[in-house]
View 1 (tube, rainbow, N blue to C red):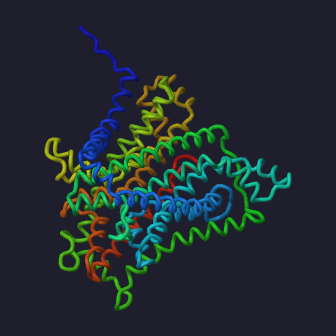
View 2 (spheres, helix red, strand yellow; view 1 turned 90 degrees about the horizontal axis):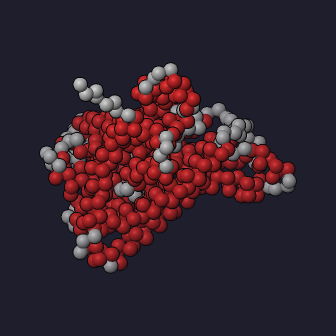
View 3 (tube, rainbow, N blue to C red; view 1 turned 90 degrees about the vertical axis):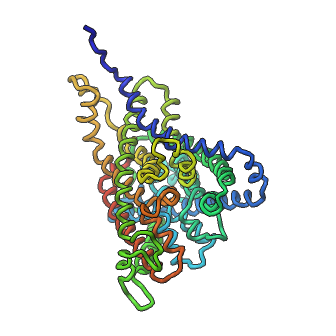
Length: 535
């Protein structure tokens, strides 16, 4: 009788790795490669030779660069507040800073349109910076909390001013985190869709909104593919820079360990604290203004917009009611979160196992970078890729309701990995070894050791992923059918049509999304593991 061979750990690890990598291959690499192939056709030279194309590129990169600088200037004082001070109310600061990053882009666009009715470049730049202050604050604070104050105190004893101490001692130590944050923020601003669509209109377009325009309104698929090719090139370059500086940041964290650097501010530090709280107040202004606007009508204060969500808007603007769109959003976000958690946890387990095994570090880093690619490549580009590829799968998924959750899961999965992976890596290997010595297999070690220690971060990642999926607008605007319209897409349609009731419905829907976002961020903050993870 033949004895069945036991599946070894390497084979099991390979099987687990196939889950996220297979999904990435079918629902990301294939559509993006199809875009590349279409973009390299005969029409690419025409598009590249058009002066308007390079004006689009210049505006896309220019507004992203200015937005990145503003986000850095606003985020650094907040990073100091979170990393270097011990004051009451820092939990509120963390929540207030993170909420804008998680808000749907269309909500932020509408909030700034209320504040700056004329829109234009200033509104676009401010809105993109508003979004990304959290990236700068959290990324830099994570490293700043590990910088020992004694080197700064020594510089002060030797006669250096506070400004010179910061420039000569603190800033060089923070350079890996600042560079990493700048690369990520630039990437997000360059691929911003909802903000530019709402605030730029037909006057100001980026590569992202031009791809959408050429696909949906002009049906110029080769031209849209050629522009996607340019955007993918810029994204890959930004991701490469981000990966390089992130490696330096992780090396710095590993070398320094955690330092007790938080204390009550003294002297001129109070000025930085005041500046940080000023930034927090400014971040709250768009949220509060939009909330008040949802209750304000020409006849005074009213809940008319909220009541109208039970309808389809003026003259049937929507194919379904706002309530049905909200239900679609909840269903799609739930499905996307379940899928993203499966993919993200599987990928994190594989990456940790490989880094602890004999796998070369370069291969592990390459796989990690590949899993991050969906975070950088435009959601509009991916949605466009779905339209030209997924008809070849059984059942033609282009018209299937499951397509929206698939696209949302692609966006959420990298965020789940960035939240769960650092926690799994931080688990003491001696605990796992002790469990294995006592006879526990790999699965039981995961269940009895890893999961209890990482449980809070897993739940936090699920909550964070759910609220991101709930507000996803870029790919969903491409893929949602009239009967599967989500709330962010419904908001976009309402504000594009005339009628005071449509506007009030949009404001009310935005406010409801903001309430859900705030509750989710509060939960994430309560569950976070201090000093570990990206958010």
